[in-house]
Image 1 (cartoon, rainbow, N blue to C red):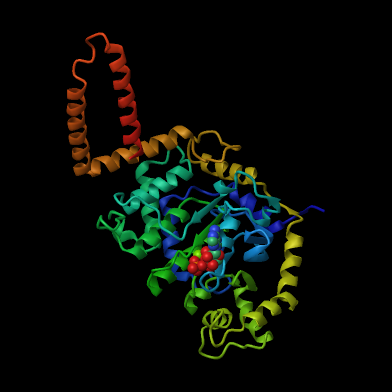
Image 2 (image 1 turned 90 degrees about the horizontal axis):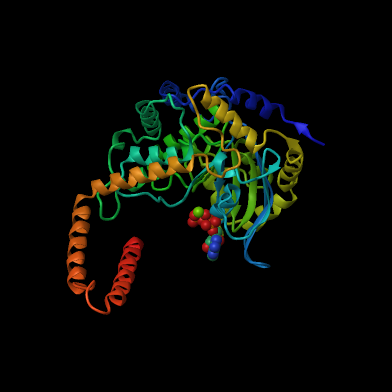
Length: 451
Ligand SMILES: Nc1ncnc2c1ncn2[C@@H]1O[C@H](COP(=O)(O)OP(=O)(O)OP(=O)(O)O)[C@@H](O)[C@H]1O
Ligand SMILES: [Mg+2]
């Protein structure tokens, strides 16, 4: 039986009316950050701007390194409505990244189970509707923070022709302000050899790149590791604001957040050694723990307490008890499975319809290229090529010493090769020598390309 989800359909109707994330809208977003508390209803869905209409459902997702041996993730199910901020928690090595990668469609090794978007199996358009922030930062050291976020966004989304570059840049600046990077927006990313921003700031640049793409679902792998407690809280508040105001969903793998950060999440999925030990609302976790016989003591942070109890090898560890309790409790696996089976029957907007809604919305602000509804890329090949080329030229010009060295090396090479092959056009064996020369020329070009 196909059931229409009223919540999703209503959000989808609004999706058609959403304005472009122009600077005034993002400016109000920055102001709204002060009102994010984690309480239910702290931020209202914005009826004109909300565009999130994608529910994520997964059933019996599991991963084994070798079939039948070395299980990394035991079968795990769940359902996240649009507008949900989800925390994936667990001790180190518990399978958070593995689960996140499977849900985000990033896992290349074979795994079992199904992942559905709005009740339908994921298709090739899924990456265009989602955004992934990996655990490791991968960025060019000699670009600035703002350039990095603008480049990333430009490769993911088309911008209407009437939106001026300055306006687009202003929008990005405001988004950088929301994650606390306003002051370093013109600093270089840096690396071990190039002086740049700090490790925590780099983490936030990765997060800003992911969040600026206007996706329906964001997957973030430890976006707050290496950040001070205050900065981490600011980032999670921003994620909650995006979820609640725009109706998008965010799944965040996170290590032991402090209490003020933990309460910002709607849903908690707690893993230990690849097994689920809690999968439900964050507000109901305390009660669940009491039912299992371990009420959270006063003055103790619930998430710290949960993690202490499910970390293998510690004195307080109760891993087997909680593993068993999840399997047998009516509030554990049974209730999740029931929810998942119900949600898998619901039909809502398809991936194509979600993309069409976004295209219609952006078309209100200027000419847009035709919607590429069957391509895995949201942006035309020529545009991607242009963006990558421009960035490469900018990087080259920035590295003047490198360019000078390359020119010098090329001149020396030319002189040496020229001297070695001088006069090859003359004599009886001219053709033979010339073939050798051209072969050497092609090889040199190919090898310098590899460099
Ligand atoms: N491809 C792989 N090859 C070998 N081991 C793997 C592979 N993928 C996952 N694992 C193992 O599976 C376990 C879970 O890994 P995963 O990266 O998901 O943990 P995590 O919860 O994200 O840990 P952390 O908090 O340290 O990031 C680890 O013990 C890891 O070594
Ligand atoms: Mg990880």
